[in-house]
Image (tube, rainbow, N blue to C red; front, side, top):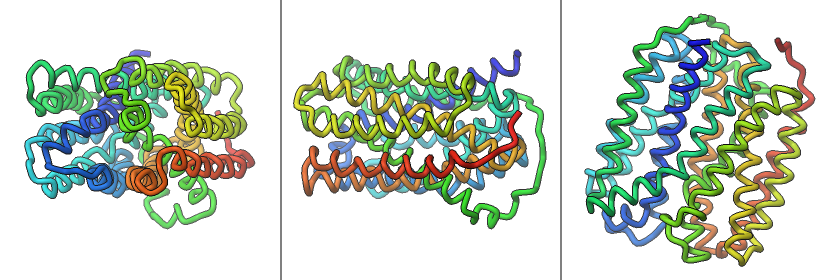
Length: 384
């Protein structure tokens, strides 16, 4: 029990900071654009895409390292390295240097989620996994509710753009040190060391399903402050509009985790979730009332939770517990291809056709996700 609690706490801290650090950049996009003398959100979006490029290419290798050398050790080194680079990011005054820094930051952060997936699986049986994942996911979901207020607050108090980066960077270094000091049991298995194992129908469909999930999620993780300002002139420091959807998403992550463990129908719930996500996107497109827009955003983000939790659990079922970090890396590799594409595609669509049509076009994303889960729900697994 002590090990489970430690993993839940450290996994939650890692998830909070991994997503939270990215949201620092999102919530401070105007200040950073001024810092780099930029005038186009499309150009600025390349900073996000550079990060996701580095983050993507280290997913599978990071999962393999966690499997070989221990997930807590790899997670800790990852946290320390990316936190140091996060501190350095605003010190750069040339945008080209910041893009290179963001790329290396992404490379450093790549192993964290495959390692956390493996750690959660080591300490939880299959029918406990969704609840544990929901708790850890909730920590990541709550970070966008806290990060903007904290980041903008630091800047208002100090007038220094670097302070939020230093604060959250130091938290990450401390968390990484605790991770490295942990001792976890390790199950070594070289069955999946050949990367060609992933070039089968199951792994490709699974990867595509997570690409769709992450594309949609990172649209909001990256551009939600911009959506509020562009459509309703709502600033990022407005607590109600900036924070409530993420708080709601955080709370429902725990509830969906418990539900999935009790009824064990991941495929069915993920399909229903994608239908509701698609409806919510149409609602966002048509909403001219800010509170109605807020409602649809909260619904859409909340019903991403069962899809994420089901995907994490599926990564531990496809090739067994001992290979969960390796398969988790493959899953995140595909997901972060979506992370690379989402910021630029959405910013470009917005400039070409406007925000309303951008949302309407985006409905195709959850429809594709629904199709992948219809296929995956037919698969059979040996479960505990």
